[in-house]
View 1: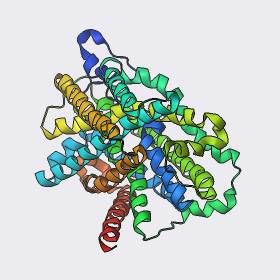
View 2: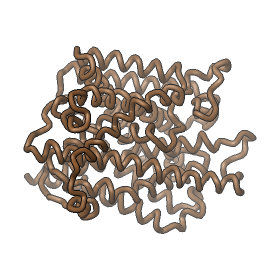
View 3: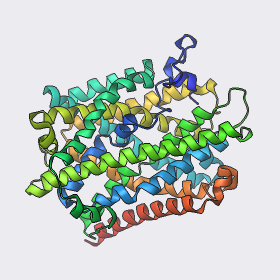
View 4: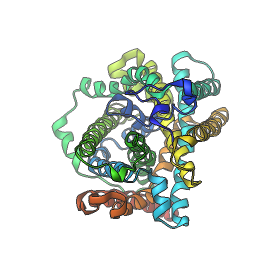
Length: 438
């Protein structure tokens, strides 16, 4: 497991004198704020929300509002499991479930992460092309090398402090909503009343929106973050550490989760509204990156492409480490590697291997001149189709006292978790039924 010393959190910079620089780039300490807003709303999320607003107007606004309680519940369960057991989700699933179900959930998660990383590499190429013109495949390759170098040599917390200022570009969508002076009174019911069409296109888009809103890697990353933060200095297990300090940490965790999820969902909602109010209202379609950038035009004017390019690059560079890191820890737990600092460098090598292989796939797809917007959209669809097994096993873990302690009696969190799982599963089933029937 990558140690807090090696990961280089904002609270404790790493000491490279002990050779820990190889591992300190995996993002295990992402607090509330702009950084998590950017990682939760990476280019795949931006494109998906824009496409949803452009095609279906305000009909999917409810997904960002009604999903909030369930996302919070799932993340709290994930973090609580890690705090009480001292292990991440993969290790707990490996311990409590049969090998076939465990491998199914982890395998689908790794596939989704690999595709997501590939899509984000393409997005960095697109972002650079919007800023400086030139070849998207060449830019994608350059930024892939840059991301790998940052993850290997620079503590994540150090360069994240710089990138978060660039990631403020995401809030330009909020500015668009303000500039347009929308009829909020008329829009308010759309935030809470679901509108569902059983057409294949709508169901596929709904699956993509849910996939990028309730992304599996956020649950794995949340658990691993708590394992690092809660690792005892004296060698005791997390089960042995109770008392006021422990309870205070859990209270802080609840507050942080509520804040960062609210901020992330608010930005996602702003993107949906901005796209619906600009592209959908004018009858246009999002068929190019220029059209995608035009969503920002009411607030950014002629700098809309530059702003979108900055958003793509900064959010991708912020999202890649937790994407690859959560996958690396999943591989380590699947192989049964001990949860100690001795194996940190090995996990770091797995992380880099995942970034290299998935990033290379992204560069190849970019060189094939596939539509980058479609690739980013489909990465969200893949997330949606792979999330259900992970969510099922996570909610089942929440019923086990050995894994979550007193939380096993908190029926509200379990109910919210099952609600999200049922909704995601229903979206998957409905999409495939509509596909095969029509």
